[in-house]
Image (cartoon, rainbow, N blue to C red; front, side, top):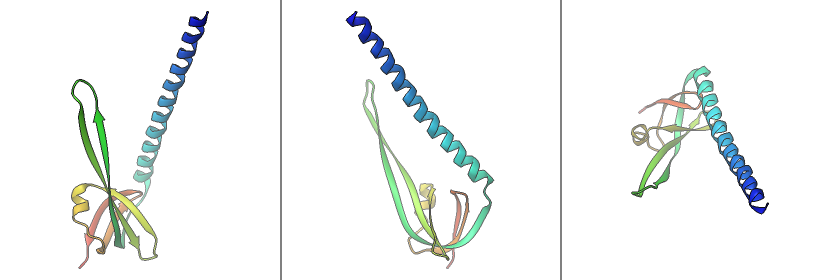
Length: 122
């Protein structure tokens, strides 16, 4: 009787944890698709801006198995300030990030939260 109760509790906990992981996965997937769709339906805007900040986020990934392996990935972000004083931080590739310097002034082209281009003005 004690064994049957313990096994039943394990099954309940297993399905609860599986359901929780599945719900988190679906939530992240739906939010990503929603943001992608919102960006696609947003107008492409080009506005004069000043670059006020740059930052990176480095993530480490550990891979188990027979051979342990660690890898890293870096995300690049730049904060732009428009003439009204409002700021927006946009994600971009490392090659685009490397061409931009804090204090730069230029024209930013973006669509929703998607960075498209930055043309420095001299």
